[in-house]
Image 1 (cartoon, rainbow, N blue to C red):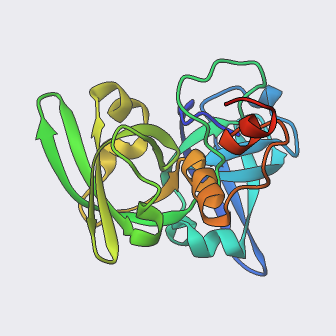
Image 2 (cartoon, rainbow, N blue to C red; image 1 turned 30 degrees about the horizontal axis):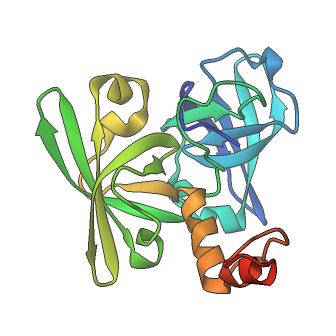
Length: 220
């Protein structure tokens, strides 16, 4: 589990394609002494497992499924990526709960300057847009952001976020251009709510009181 607060930007040092999994080497801006084999690191919002490391970089494996559903398909050596280590239980949660399980790939539609900040419009398939709400949370390339506006338009959903200078400087979002692709993870709470609504819930709590229950107990 992650927070969506990027610890720093790294660079892809090596990339080996072939077989079922790809091998990705990434330089890290933080001390790797505390990173153990088997630890999780979010790379552009994708939760990956560390399989090797040295003093300045770590290596992760990327499954074919992950390549197919994220922007990892187009990753290249030298590319700058957002990095975040898994959160520590009991630590502060300044962003929002991010699983590192990317829902879909979104596309940048346009960038609109707003004073020192930049509003960025994205588009995603409507199947995932149903989980996006104004003032809700969303992760774009692993960055926790607040949704400003949402527009449903048939097969697609458009939404906008505001990138303040600090966020732009500390993440790769300042380098986005129209037409660019990003990893999008919607708020997991929305998916749980939909599951409850579509299935009628996971069972009625045994202690729940309603009108029939009160009448049965003698209340008039």
